[in-house]
Length: 194
Image (cartoon, rainbow, N blue to C red; front, top):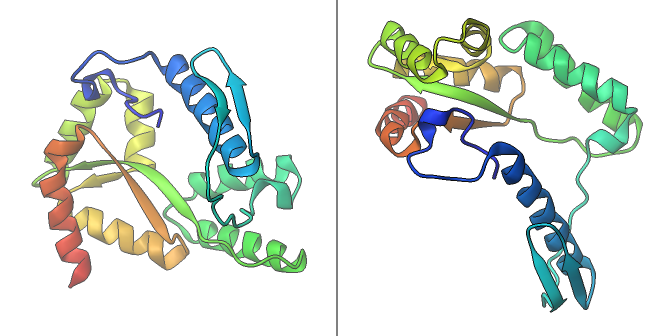
C-alpha cells in the first residue's frame, strides 16, 4: 500500500511517503472496525465514514507473530534473519521462531519476505539497472545486492530456491517499474516450474 520507494517508480504524481503511510493506517483502522463492529463511525485526517456497515462479517483467523514473544526478541530476530538472509543462520532463526511458537502452544507460521528485485539479461545488466534506479546511493545498493533478488532470471530463480530451502514460504517481489518487469518475472517463474 505504501510502495514506490524510489522516485523513478512513480510515473505519475502521487502522495508523499508519509501521507501514504497515514492513509494506509487509517484504511486499516476502518477495515478492522467494519469487521468487528456493527455501526462504524470514523473521522480521521484522510478518511471519514458515518454509520458504515460490512455484512456478513468475515471469518477471522488469529495472526501470530509479534505478540507471541517480547517485542525486543522479534526485532532482534528480524534483524538476524535479514542480516543472514542467504546463509544457514537464517534457517536456524526460522526454526527458532517455530520452536518458540510450539512452546507457547501456537501453530507454526509461514514466513514471507519482501525483497527488491531487479532482473536483467545477465547478472551485470541487473546490477546496472539496480544502480540506475537506486540513484547511485552506495549504501542502499550494497544492502540491496546483499539481500535483494538481483541478477539474471537463472540467478534470481536460484536465490528464490535458496530462500525456500531455509524456510521462507513466500517471496514478495518488489519490482521497479512493475509492468515493465513482468516479462522478466515470467522467465523466473518458468525456471522455477521446471
